Image 1: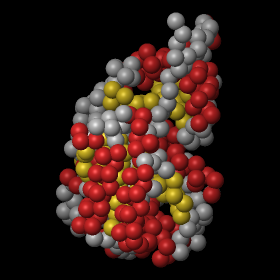
Image 2: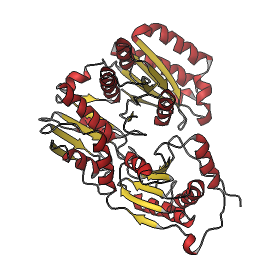
Image 3: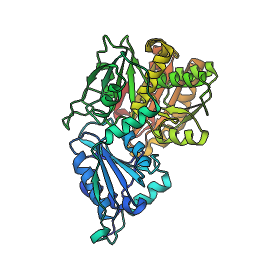
Length: 450
């Protein structure tokens, strides 16, 4: 029976561990990785209960394919990427489902330079998962080595490049009971800040559970200058200012971009996705900072940054890439860089964050009965007419974005406007047009996020 290739999604492979993502899948990926990259291959993971099971199977596949494995243990995703070139690896693999709940898990690869794989390389790995190889024996089997000090090595590399003079500042860290639970306290401990820790007691089942960047509003930051909330694999971070206000990825990007511009170090402008707030674009226009807009996904941001030679880019979610320091989004680097701006400017985060006004935003996910019909519905004449009318009503004080999902039977309708009432009303009107255009529109299930 012919074996079908394992296909990658927008960020590797992700699914419920031991159901969609089984040890057998991880083993096949390991075998394919050994064939595609050679060795050594690094493996890191977050704190999920299934992490050991899947990383062990992945390591077994790589070793069985004849490549050496270096097991880094629990380490932030960007830490795995950062150590790849430092340790002379041919590639690196991460077992994590990022901000997803603990039953999920995922596997993704980085190149030996610590960058996301090109689509061509991903396709090569995918095709290799369908092949059977003659496996080596004797000394042809790959060794599996465990590195016990990976977190400290990663942190030392960061602080060699970026060490804010923040002694005595009151800092809170929420590590989401995830991959940053060891590395982040080490890094900030080296800065001699007055440190408060949260989300540093992983059980295997409490990663992202009412903590971290997906629940940043739960943080009580009273008495602190700043709080940083990481997601489960610490490739993103959100901040909370001294007044308890959340500072999202857009404002973090705006603060960092302005600082780089003022220091004469901003190259290639800023790269963001279509989901960035309208207020961000207006702030960039006011400061005459050029920007490029990509589809949603950090790999698109990274690709555009590489093409433009851009210094900074990222997403509203807090996934930020500072090309001077890292090759991929790194929550720890972002937090250190933001703290550094605060210290050098002598200003509280609330004042720095006033760089942009955040426009009210309404997002409605309209379910379409036929999963493959989302693009057709979004491009239908009634929907295009509704969008055109909405654009006329919103004018220069707002915008509308219609985005068919690539992974769900959903069309996302996002509207921003200076007036929150107008914002919601227009979004609901366009969502209704999308719903009517879909099959069985009366039963379309709509989930509203504001």
